[in-house]
Amino acid sequence: MRAIDIHVHAGIGPEPRGVAEMADLYRQMDLLALPIAWDEESRSGRPRLDNDTLAGIVKEHSDVFIGGWACIDPWKGQMAVKEAEHVIRDLDLLGLKFQQDAQAFYPNDRRFYPLWEKCVELKAPVMFHMGTTAYGVNQPGGAGIHLKYARPIPYLDDVAADFPELTIVGAHPAWPWQEEMLAIVLHKSNVFIDLSGWSPKYFPESLKREVNGRLQDRALFGSDHPFVPVARWLSDFEKEGYKPEVMEKVLYKNAQRVLGLNI
Image (cartoon, helix red, strand yellow):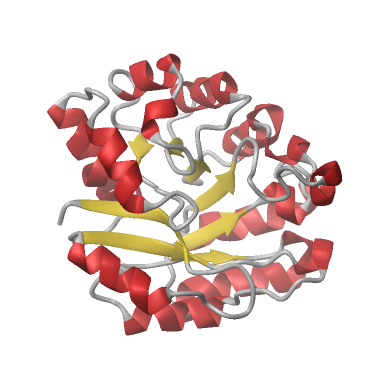
């Protein structure tokens, strides 16, 4: 096993796209992965890639997809809480992924705290999208997407403080608020960062320095494939001069420890 990619998209919408081809690619590259479902129905009305479908994908390609991230629309209230229990206990998915820009919500809104309470009860990790997004980029008004929802402080920081037993992964380097994200990860031991969505050659120097130093046990490999091709991400990462022991941690050891992956 070369690495564990904790951030892979099986498609956005009701039909998974190119899943078999993606699974074959990861097999050929000796990689394992955690694909993600999708649900933004309340904001946009668009069909979702539902969690049962994702669980079927994981089961069909279990040699390479070692788990999956459910996606739940938090605006669905009690139904969202029940869905969280279903995806963890019945579908055996790993945790929950949220895209606040697409779903139009602040994680620290008290209306959503029952959902975080349920995740603590289920011992399910939660991944939040952080920083800007390619969704709506270069469109008038950004297609109605508001970037404010994915700012780390105070929105993610409040949740991390109020739920210290909740394992939280901040997805992406969180630009333009990267320093805020680094501050949270350094301050709160229940918060981690995945490095997906950007080529490693474009990581700011402060992020490279922290990953190679104080945050070497807190950073996890994610590509955002196919939006950032996994082969490109790994190739660029290997050229950036990280210490060999840091590369091992980022590429698979941290994911095994933080997410409890029994491989």
